[in-house]
Structures are given as structure tokens and as C-alpha cells.
Image (cartoon, rainbow, N blue to C red; front, side, top):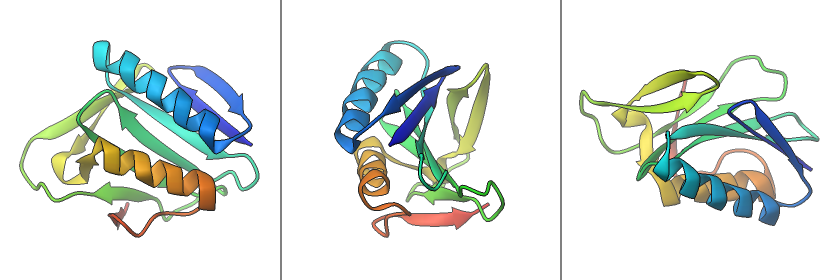
Length: 128
């Protein structure tokens, strides 16, 4: 079971495929509106992985089920002074560009998280 949250909305989904479909829909909406962070939580463990949708590049942030550190953020290959922002709840959250990865890579990380739990080793992670 999965809980997906964004913009004060919450959906309970029973399969990783349902999560994929919802993320596809949300990405299409957020491309036309505000790029937004969407949190996918594994109901069993409480672990969550947030993904930025609505841009060509995304940011991922992992929080364990106990909500205690360490937290992890994706690490991409671009290290410039620009930031990348996503709406989270009512506010904008800005991340350094070095935390961004191509959105298809971020989506694959969410797929891994939903199907296997934990973080994929296909991208680097920085401890927050």
C-alpha cells in the first residue's frame, strides 16, 4: 500500500503501477501549472520519497519512517549557482541545481523505491 501526497491532497493506492499512473498524470498537470513536490510513502515502513514533478529536472528527498535523520537528497551532475524550485504545500522550496537529476532518472528511482524499498544505487545521494 502507498500513500501519495501533494498540495494538501492524499491518495491511498494499492500498487506500484497505480503510483506510476498517478505520477504520470500529476507530471502532465504540473508542466502546465506549478512544478510541485509529490511524496510517495510506503504504508508498511512509513519511509517516504519526495519527487519534484513538472520540470525537465527533478529533485528527490528521502525520509525514513521514524522521521529521524539521516535524510537523503539526490545528487546530480550539474553544479552551478542556479537553483530549482518546486511548490511544497503552500510554499516554494528551492534546491541547489546540484541536487537535480533528469526527471526520467528520478521516476526510475521512485519505481525502485515502490517495488523494492530503499534508495536506488543508480544515482548518488547526499546526506542532509
